[in-house]
Image (cartoon, rainbow, N blue to C red; front, top):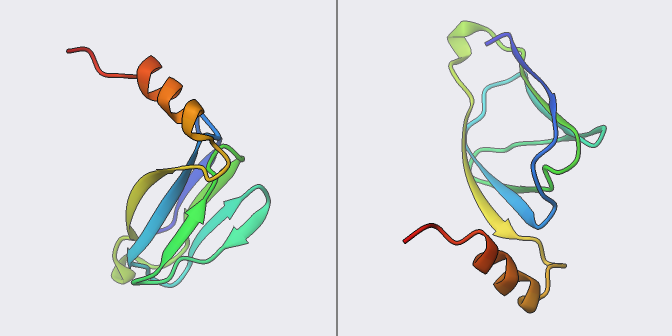
Length: 94
């Protein structure tokens, strides 16, 4: 509660982040590219985190933590050939 994460940009626009709200107390805020976004428990929110974004939890300690499950997905504008090239470039070492 009463926490704020300074603005940051994700490393790439080749992905979209899917935020699944698991526990969203009152007073939680996500702002992406200057636009407020709304988490909701049990619902997904798709975010391009390559834009400047901030996170805040303005609730009380009694509200508990914000819990969000995050999954990275390919951005829909990334073509199949580009995905293959990125998979090759960023493949883990054997």
